[in-house]
Length: 285
Image 1 (cartoon, rainbow, N blue to C red):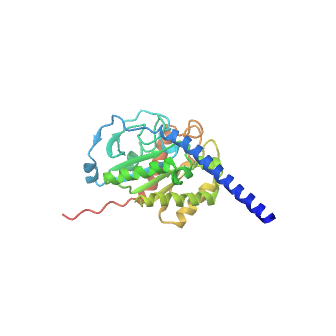
Image 2 (image 1 turned 120 degrees about the horizontal axis):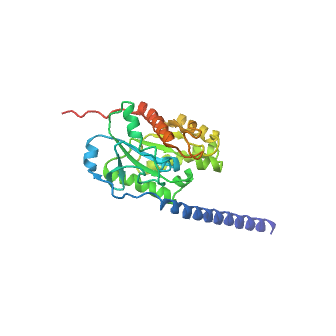
Image 3 (image 1 turned 30 degrees about the vertical axis):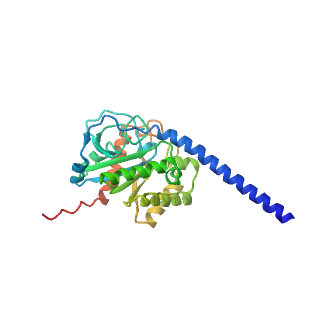
């Protein structure tokens, strides 16, 4: 009888744990969906022919992450040309704030094509951006999560336009640093991110930024996880150390980038990308 009672209690506890887990996930998904509703949508930006964009043999970059991958930088007046951006199933010429990300300010990616050009990369650059403030890596990878579904639809749109990414740029980690995910947890989550991209046909190299500081010191556990992932898998490669951009010159609130911070981060990303860059082969006439 005692064993039966103990078994019944164990089953009941397991049911309670599962129910609480599902409840927490539901609450998280509700909050995440609210954040996704703040993602900037395509508006009146001029369209360009995706066929013509493809014909230019561009380098396609899919930028993913949280607020520092989005439009949360300090707004600044720029004289740069608009960037070519995939938004849904359209190719557009866009300025800050870029469609696909939360925030109403400026972004790293708006500056990245010019930074690459400054390092001698002449190949045209096409961007697609999906960035949601406060999003943990688990929100990106958990099956059924609103953000994972949005990631899947983003990759599907790239496939439809014939502009699958040459590189995925991952600028995330601050939320998980705050939550204390730990080295092993973040390594495992990066593996799940790779699987989520693979399942949808995005098999490009994934460059990982050190992006762990937000009114805090850099997070050693996540930084070590990034190094371990890059050492263990050829799919993961080291991106820039944006944690090094500290102080009021680079972060206006201790977390998000000033105009100088955005320029510096774009340059660091360009320096990380340039050694990876191999021009496409010239087709025989």
